[in-house]
Amino acid sequence: MAASAQVQRVSPKRNATDSSMPAKPNKMKAAKAMKDLDLNKVQKGKLKALKQEQKAAKDAIDNDATLTTQQKEEKTKALRKQFLTNMQEILTPEQKRNLMESRKKQADTE
Image 1 (cartoon, helix red, strand yellow):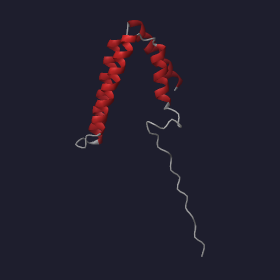
Image 2 (tube, helix red, strand yellow):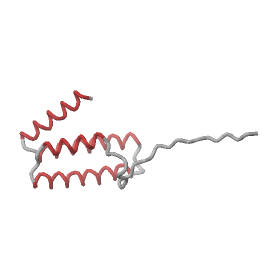
Image 3 (cartoon, one colour):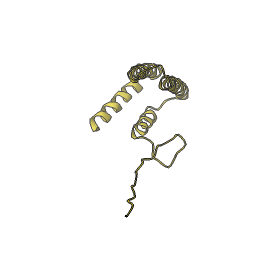
Image 4 (cartoon, helix red, strand yellow):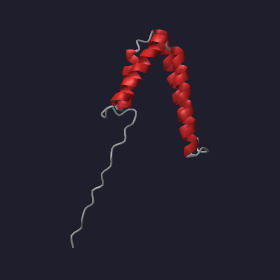
């Protein structure tokens, strides 16, 4: 009696230190959009701090075992909205226009 071998295909999971896999397309688009905004040194520092705060808050949401999946999604959505509001406060009116144009072009191509 011949034994049949089963092959299980597992897609690799990307971790923060795995540089062998390319970054997610959305992250690459976001990085290009930020570069295109031509942020000054102060703006870059403020944005970096804002991103760190958002990441810490997002991690806290993800790791909160008392929240349901729906509650986590709602809190994440609210966090994202607050991040965008705070980011807008950092940008000049011209940078805001450029960002909106970039987002519109991106939406048109997807």
